[in-house]
Image 1 (tube, helix red, strand yellow):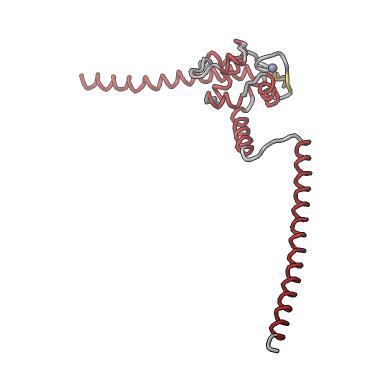
Image 2 (tube, helix red, strand yellow):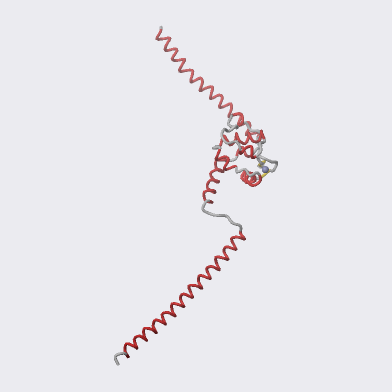
Length: 208
Ligand SMILES: [Zn+2]
């Protein structure tokens, strides 16, 4: 009897994880459906609203560039510092949209990410193009740009033209200096030839 009881208990134990799996499966398919419904409801305007003001832009890249110059908020550096990935990025966007924080308030978040909860996975604005933006691709691109840029300096075109003119004139001066050196060499060769022939004459004349 005991053995039978035990084996049935075992069967029950084995069944329970299966039933949990089924539950998870149901939950997943439900959430998939939810997302599908959300997808259907979304009609992206492609007008990206700034994270901090009412300005709109034709792309997320332009908006992030505006954040850098207009709000002194470097999205790339901030996302890098906060170790933002595809999921936490979406949470971050919804968090910002909901709480409308100032750039400095966001920048002062240094350790814990207050957006790291499932709550912020829910779109604050279904039409927000930032929610489907390829943040990982953007981060990779920026990383490469900034790594490449480390060995180069960006200067205004006018300054570049001035530097080029200076370089041309310095090259010209250097060429003139070499020309002078060449002429001096020829002169000295002439002087030495004359000296040698003079000494030679003296040597020939001296036995007399
Ligand atoms: Zn703005």
